[in-house]
Picture (cartoon, helix red, strand yellow):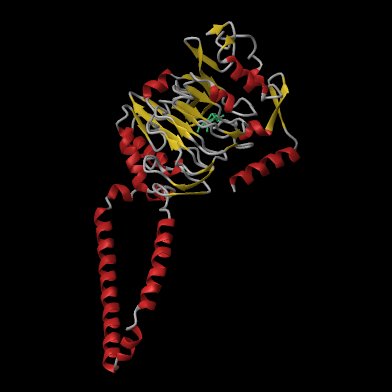
Length: 420
Ligand SMILES: Nc1ncnc2c1ncn2[C@@H]1O[C@H](COP(=O)(O)OP(=O)(O)OP(=O)(O)O)[C@@H](O)[C@H]1O
């Protein structure tokens, strides 16, 4: 693809590089006429054209738009940077091969504008923690399987094609509504607005209303009062019967197994149980890996094939950062067989409880594997390092020294504020 006029993708990559005035370290290798030479960090090519740009956590600034002008791109992963500006409208003619678009957590500067994507073959859209605005009506991604637009400034009704995703894919927006979030109220308001004038008109237009009122004699009033009392009694009795039936059915349905881990189950109140159960059911079918909400696409084979780097080691096992083929990054904890011998069912039971736990301050368990003595827990990967590494600085020679109390206090205070 290097023609007399140069490589076709070069202008877009250089334009992106030039929008990073401080020359982010990640882009230092972006030199020379051929981005497919193998030396450009984060750039992957197929048949001489740029097919992937993998620049998560690369301290990038500037606009993402030039990267979306790469016509043969399949994967764009630019999470956890400080990119800004709007996304250009994307469709089959601008981006015919785009399958995975990972833009989440550019939240210090924010990606903005509307999500105007009409991409029939897009499989992954991760756009959470940005400032995308407007409605979702221009988002047409029928094949998308991994989807998250939470914590943006989106408004309006969620289309039926997207309502199959859990509420966590949409939460934290300005004003989104409709399944799986609470119902939109505008339909009701409109109905009220529509009907109120009619109702008023119909009363005003009825010439016989006043006449009818005067016709009510004492007998009529007594009959009205009696009907009112009768209705009240009837409603009260029906309510009492309904409540009693509900309590009875609930007691009947509750199995002893569900009663046992009551304290843990109480923790699960963050999400509607039904949705989570549905998610689990979907996940059960994915082979040896049991997955939970948000981990539906995880496959043991692709996890085992993923490139892995050790993050650290604890008492119960080691944790790895795994980068899957499609650019998805996960933290995988491999439990030591010594620490967790036997008792497979108890382990499964425990994992199912932890897997239902969803809270913005708790890292989500997306899936686990418990077969052939191998126990793997798959979590979201959190890119910002540990609190310990924030509180310590490298003193050279591999030694670290603690920061002074003032700096520690401001870091801890910042972290605590983040928890509010
Ligand atoms: N989801 C994650 N994302 C990013 N880093 C993680 C994640 N989970 C763990 N780590 C990092 O991996 C390292 C080891 O984590 P791990 O959970 O194994 O430690 P631990 O809590 O001491 O383990 P244990 O409970 O077995 O004693 C830590 O430095 C931690 O910062």
